[in-house]
Amino acid sequence: MLEKLTIKNYLLLKNIEMDLSPGFNIITGETGAGKSILINALMLLMGGRADYSIISRNKEKMIIEGVVSISGENSKTIAKILKEHDIESLGAGNLIIRRELYSKAYSRCFVNDTPVGTNELKEIGDVIIDIHSQNEHQSLLRKELHIELLDSYLVKKEGKKFSDKLNSYKSEYYDLQEYLSEYESTRKRKDELDNKRNFLEFQLKEIKDVNPEPNEDDALDSELKTGENIEGIQQGLAIAYGNLYDEAGSVIERLKVVEKELGKIGEYNSDIAKILKDIAETSTTLNEASRQIGSMKDNLSFDPARVEEIRERLYKLQFLKKKYGGSIAEVIKLREDLEKDLSLVDNFDEKIKDLDKKIISARSSLLKKAQELSKIRKDRSKTLETEVVKVLNEVGFENGEFKCNITSPPAPLPKGEGRDVLGGLGIDDVEFMVKINKGDEFTPLRKTASGGEVSRIMLAVKTVLADADNVDILVFDEIDTGISGRIAQKVGRVMKKLSEYHQVIAITHLAQIAALASEHYEVLKETEGEGTITRIRALDKNEKVIEVAKLLSGEKVTDASIKSAKELMLDK
Image 1 (cartoon, rainbow, N blue to C red):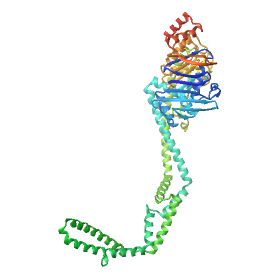
Image 2: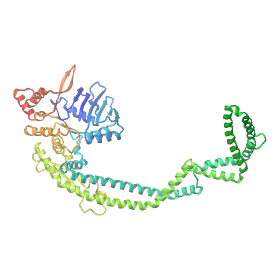
Image 3: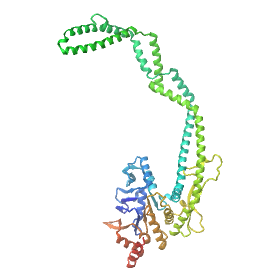
Image 4: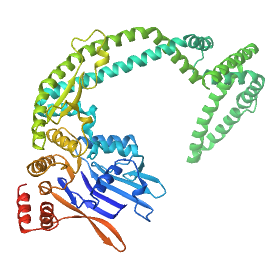
């Protein structure tokens, strides 16, 4: 619902704030007072075209802000829209929508203080509000929604029996889309691989001819350094071995002398015993080091031809790294990917055949389910038609008729056509049709005459679909055009009933409708300084009676009109 509407510097509206009720909100006022400005402000707030001439004279900018709370399924839809456009969420289905128009002919839009474009405002507006004023924001005029509204109505009427069939179809249709997507991507991948198969095979052969091993380049690089410096390494090992172990006066020989001398005095001092233990451990370590150095010295040799062999191998590896990824690990990964891709080419035909079988089977099953749904829609839509006609009669269309025009391809379908007719909700094309006068032809709802007439038709349809239609806010601009008396009272009652399911905001000239309001607002012009401004104020109980009496008798309120107003208000 629209909890609060703020408008600043819109023509004569200097600064107004309206706190609206969740039920039936009525707006009244003299002709020219500015009632329709409210409707235009809401259209702007929902992404309507900007007209910079509406900014109040001598003001830099105009501001319209709405605080909206959303419940039920719409909160999930809005949450998805906010996520898609990186708009901050306030949680619990709350929105703050603001539009600013500047005198320099540019505008800014915000949702929850996040800057957005008018397209985002329209996307949100299509979900939360229907404005019945010259065909603006009327979701019922969007043919693509009619099948969803009919199905929601049938779920309400038929219950689990219909909803299970519908959900089963939707689930299988989703699976079919997955198969089709996989089929297309597989075909595309196969075509791509077929087109560059020779190139892939060339790349794989080039890598396999070298056949690199993990970390091979590092190991070869180390080996090459050894080969290139063999003489220096051998000389260093010989000197180290001699000084450590082999020559007279070597480290190990001198260490034995130290052990011997300390052993003579160790019994006299406990600290020396500890030192002797450390020296013994060191001696063991040095002996092991000597053994390893000696082994390396005796066994180290290097074939000069091996150096050239390593250099050649490293050159080949370097070439692969430079061409295919920068490291041996990347080259090996590419080899594995190429082998996998080329293997897929050989298996693609089999996979495509398997997917084709699944698609054919899914389409066959879906077609049966779609035909079952179609039969239910065609059989049960008569109830919807009857209910809407009943309300049409109540709101002044005594000869009005309503029809759910459901068209679907004939059964059985020609072979192969199933792929063309299946949609997300079956095979049906649904459009709401109306006939207002006797002798008229049925015409699509979207082509019905504009003004109060179409608004009353919308009112009738929405009343029957109240549970099925998820729009939170319904706005009716002078729906009472061309009606009075008994019909006006019926229209008011229908709108009152509708407000049990949606927030209803209506501009009216009729007392019979205004008397039923949950909240009543008066729009009036006042003089301020040298100019005129428009004010909007919520009426208390006594003021509501006076305003309804004015609608009955004109500006001069009589005791009789007050009595009649009270009677109308008691007739809620």
